[in-house]
Length: 116
Length: 117
Image (tube, rainbow over all chains, first blue to last red):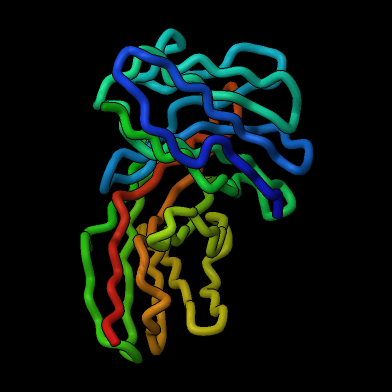
């Protein structure tokens, strides 16, 4: 399966600031995704990171708040902008691993964000 | 719209007991995929199984087994002879293709399993 790493693994930030999270995959993948997992909750898809074009956002998430880059087939970034305490969550990137079967997603270790 | 329900919020069992985690899904698509993931206290999501909608065969992997029944839209997960290391949050998920791009991947709310020694 694809090996996914994320940086940073955790961070504590002040409200009003921005944080960029990096996701690196050890192989080229077509589909990359960003999720949010609020404390004690399930995962919610933020957006699909498209290589060479703008990300596709889910309802309730906007580009101004969560800009995403996908410069190539192995790397993506998610920025959490103008943070507030409500943004405190785990942010996870995932990739679709076709070798494991269509639709199968493998997840990175996550970035634990605390906003004060 | 797709939806996944895991009615059991929390389950506690004693080691060596068998436990079944329920998952009920909703979709109008005829082609879809079902998944189970494990999230131990460390937080990382671990892929356990994928099942497509055309394959209703039950699957067994060691102490884990899955029962897929389209008639009841259920995809239940059983752990036999549970162990303390099985303590985690377990998520059931549903994936369907989107018209324009990729997959619509929906997670259930999760079931927290505690296995007591």
